Length: 368
Ligand code: OSB
Ligand code: MG
Image (cartoon, rainbow, N blue to C red; front, side, top):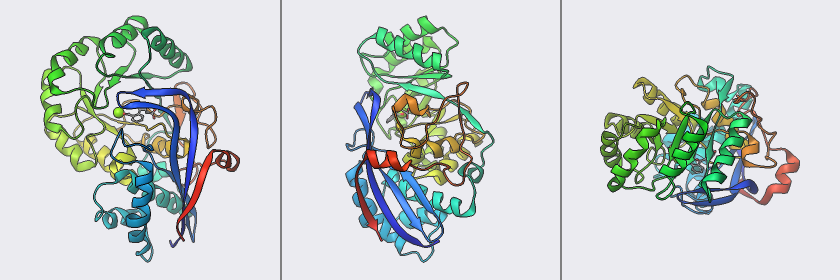
């Protein structure tokens, strides 16, 4: 396959409701899509991070520069680039997993379209639909939270994740348990908001029978997470701290996590995400697919990944309506608490031209 053109399309799409986490509040999805044109097919992907480096060190303007000056020149030097050949060539650039993932995914999409193969088939999916959980942001009050959770459950979501931070943890979890019962699959995500000094406080979450507590402590501190796990009955799940399959192997060996959140972008793409899945599954550690409030372009390939056999817990891949009044693609609609795995070639979806025009802020050629 010959690379002919790589275009960056900046988009901004308003969220239906502000999304607040321990690291900040988002009111729209403001990022870029990558559009790759080859001599055989075209491909699309979505950069998963935001304009500011608050969830992770990467951010949109930085990623654009990294793609333009460091990643694309290395790919352009390959006579016939393939998605599998990308990671080894890009390994010379340290970090920048999310930027690398965007490039690999767009190329993989083009490649699979040329072969007429759906991403789910390529990755080894065993399901044609995946159960949908929903990630519920920090609210101004407990009654407001209970209203939101009630609405999501009425829509059919099969698992609730509550964002927590110091000052918004025990009370909202207790209120949700009391209102919706002990059977509700419930978990929490702190996005690194606590330290090991909070261990005794976090231990009080044990009485609520949570599925897991996600990334409670500092990013990359596997030692502290292992120490915390020794003191908690609730399984620790890592998100921000896992950047590849090797990290995942280390974290499992250290008992720093008993559940794994895979975000393909965070680990450099779908090929490494599959390896993370393989490592965790081999250890009997449950895996689930995280999300980054993606548009349909980012969510479609996540659904393909989440159809792999080791994904034994519902993920954060919610329906389009949970994020946007109007998605950039055909919307993903919840059916009986599940989302369908795309069946078309590649990621199985593309931007609707009219919606893309309306949501586009800027288009730039990165490579011609
Ligand atoms: O930590 O999982 C996270 C959204 C943006 C950044 C980080 C996270 C999240 C979510 C929402 O929890 C997941 C989603 O619905 O896409
Ligand atoms: Mg998380």
